[in-house]
Structure formats: C-alpha cells, structure tokens
Length: 96
Image (cartoon, rainbow, N blue to C red; front, side, top):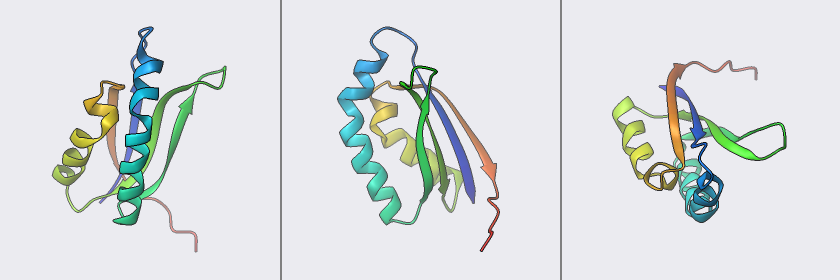
C-alpha cells in the first residue's frame, strides 16, 4: 500500500540543531529505503525563509506495521526531530 508521510519538526530553539545532527544518518536510511523499493519520492518542507521545518515522503510498504517499523528506526524519529507525524494511505496516479 502507498502512504503519504507528513512530518513536522519541533518548533523549539534546538530543533534545527537536532535535524542537522542526524541528517546524514537519515539520508543514508532514505537511500536504503529507495534501494529496497519502498521510497517513491520525498523531500523537505520549507518555511517562508527557505529553512527546513519538516519532511514529506511518498512510500510503499506491504503493511502499515512495516511502515511503522521503518519510522521507529528513522533517525529523525529516534533523534527527536519529527514531532508531528501524519501517515495517510494514498493511491498515486500512474500517468505513464
């Protein structure tokens, strides 16, 4: 099943530093997700100043439990970066 993950960072003064500290590990994990065929697309949510304040991902997993397992291992979750996460089942249009 396909899912849209929308995750906003914390808004406390330390939030940008938490993101910077674990970003390399998060990117490595996303690369693994892509190689495994689970990542469809993703990127940062920006504020008006162009600063990263969250992320959005389109992913595909066999079950919601598999998605939850991945989320719980992601450094943005375990590192306290993402504070507000919404997961929505979706069906992306195939325009090929």
